[in-house]
Image 1 (cartoon, rainbow, N blue to C red):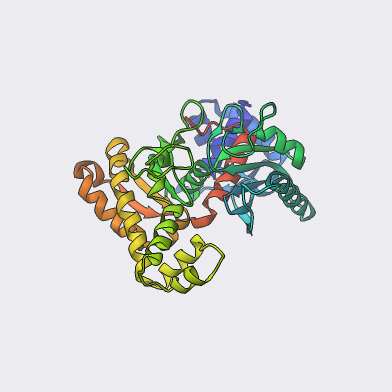
Image 2 (tube, rainbow, N blue to C red):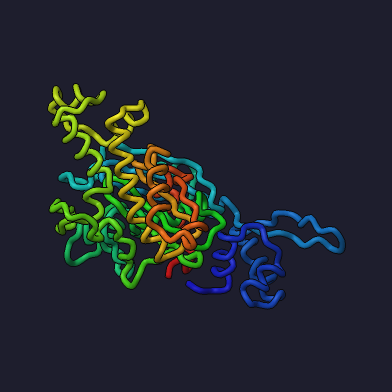
Length: 391
């Protein structure tokens, strides 16, 4: 869809509260044409008159913006171990967030369970009076943007995953990579707001990267760009989830952190988690390690600082290549805050070209664990409007 109306709506998703002359100039259409289409969109309930501008002299023009109640969007951030759900209005306001724990992507029956979760969320939204226009499911791994199919989870020859989920849940939806959804959420509504060039590092159970170039998410030819976790980085002979050895993810990720903490405890180092590791049949969780860092456990702090130094070595190279305005670090490991970021920053300063890195800000995600769900809502709205937000 690339009609004048959709172009106006897309423009106002990024420039809420604009005058008709500003919209006319930005979209390259006459004021008369802009006035006609804006009036039509107001009548249809997509836009609303926000009042007059604060003009010093002369007639004050009216501001127009998206009408919050024109429709709603659901975003599902489907992780290896949980699902985070967000509900967004047409104007971009987040109305609700909900974390659904105890979900595993690789468990038997997880596809059927996911379909039921999607359907229940839509039914609950409809019962509350929300008009769902579109949904977005963000998944880890390789998502083909052209076909909306996953080659990491639930892949089945014949029908694409997006098609199968639409049939299973009975609702309009699209599919998107989880790290790029986080990136888009953080870019528009988080730490990257107001920038044009950004890198997002997602340090979760795995390791991913999102790229924003000139205000657009970079996906590459097929949508696979940003496989930072599967770049060869370590001569450790550890087999990665992708089947290769020595990927960045094998030493810089939640799984690497958990593996190292358990190994060091079993080798005799002391930690508040020592009794847990030695006496329980249940495997230690990443959440427990992050909680131990918050309780100043020396072993866990040392392990997360090691992750930070290794991440800094790799990100220093990315900064030299991309020269971004900002590098945002998100995912579960970012919950450890400066224990991860301080050694990362120091290592970046050591290994990057100062002339390049001096203008790059390193910060933690502002949206935290909601970044993926918020970003998925924004992608759902863009897909509905036919907005081009990728390159």
